[in-house]
Amino acid sequence: MHHFEAVRSHLGSLHGLRQNDPYLISFDLSLPHGRHQGIYLAELETESGRRYLRISTPIGPLAGTDPQRCLRFNWAQRCGFLAVADLDGAPYLHLCENRPYELLDEGELHRVIVELGTLGDQLEQLVANGSDAF
Image 1 (cartoon, rainbow, N blue to C red):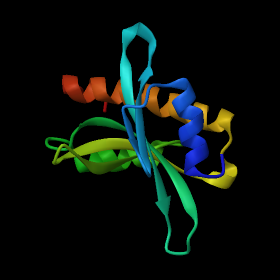
Image 2 (cartoon, rainbow, N blue to C red; image 1 turned 180 degrees about the vertical axis):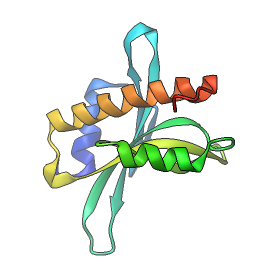
Image 3 (spheres, rainbow, N blue to C red; image 1 turned 90 degrees about the horizontal axis):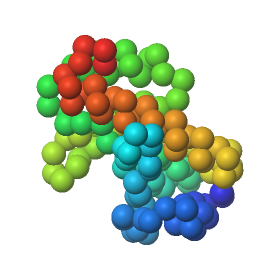
Image 4 (cartoon, rainbow, N blue to C red; image 1 turned 120 degrees about the horizontal axis):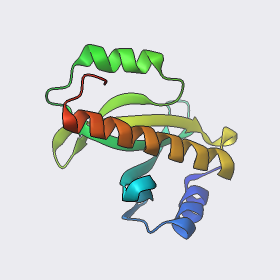
């Protein structure tokens, strides 16, 4: 997994891609109890030319979310961080992880996708229910 096309090829053989753009793909990850979580993968490039794979999943609308709670969540996580991205023109909270390609193989890619997808689904349910546990 040393470039985005290898990621696209691998994941396209396992999942039906909902979005398939030059540097962005997405699919639905099947979870227990019939649930699904949208997973987005994009290529990022730093000013120095180093390329990363960003894996993200939407959590919920940013409106009404306590920023201090988001920062506390980020501080406590060992994998993934909360960030804001536009979804249909509205600010939306996403759970993200950036990985350099040179440290990424099929096993690690799968592990990160499942971990983010599972945690993202749990967070999405908490945000949707207005729970204080988030």
